[in-house]
Length: 484
Image 1 (cartoon, one colour):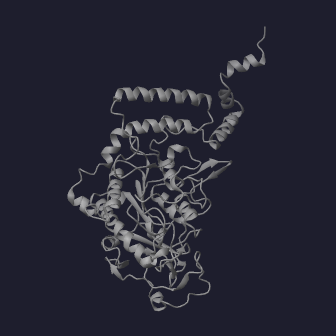
Image 2 (image 1 turned 60 degrees about the vertical axis):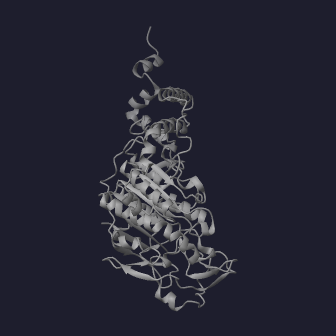
């Protein structure tokens, strides 16, 4: 009896995947791979650990990034970019085309800065009197004074600074970095966020979420006091062996569920998160315990005094996490609304008088500490908010004189990790309204951060909904003048 065609196929191809691989020059398997990639179902380089270290596109300048986010929009023209013409025109009517975004009925005249400026360092960079400690490390900073973004509102602007677009649902820059590079420490998250004791920023976890990337790559929020993660500590009545058996059971149940629901991408992430939490019970408390740091180091960060204690502890923890292989760390200065953040509608001087001393010494201490430990060259530090402030006054209901949002021109800076120190790139016009020189978009900032970490922003892509996505979408240019 001759074998049927079905029998012959069964002999040659043990599985349907084997058939796709061996017939038609393998084009069937290529099609399957494309569908799996589109749905995010392809296995990672190490199928047992999606966060395993991955090779960069080229040799990186930085192995870690610390993003100091000043939530609410700090005023560059009151901190780093003095405007002599604005001083001369103080109290005069603004140009007709300078239209405030909010509170048009309360918008007033052009307003000079209430602060004095001086040049500092060998580079002679301008710094406001409100940042005396940061002025001492100005030769390590590269200023970006021509930044601009696409929204005048906090929600879309902060999402764009974090995720590249003004709408929620896209991966954050830290998620893209951990997707592209993995993490160097299997016992710690690759991406950590620490926010202010007054509350988190608007949109909350959307600012550090993984979006359409697998949820392995979202940030882990850590607290700077008490238990770093709620419910991280093991029940004192449970031994380590018992907890391990419990974890093994959860893993087996998860694997069984995943086998029946292969399209559910979050199952493996949940399994991995349980295992990571188990490992972090030993590692995280040690990483975040600063009691062993010298008193001199604590004083360097301003931990020994108010109001810099809270942010100083966060900056010191960030350095300790970098030492232990955490890839991307984001620290939020301020939280809540209005004067509890850098959002200076209700009084510019009152606002910045509160918040500048909270961060000045911690930021300078971080730069100094990284540098003396030989870590600054391999650690990229980024400072900025979601936008800046306008050069006109804004009267609040309390009678204080503030400034409105300004997405058309604002200031950021970078340090370490392949950045040229003591330089300034870009500028706003003579009154600080809009960027006119060295215009730097959010996409440019993201492209440069990825480049310094060894990733080509045009090649770091992920297929979603039938098209390849990237952090910089279809834009983004490297900021060459600040690259060392």
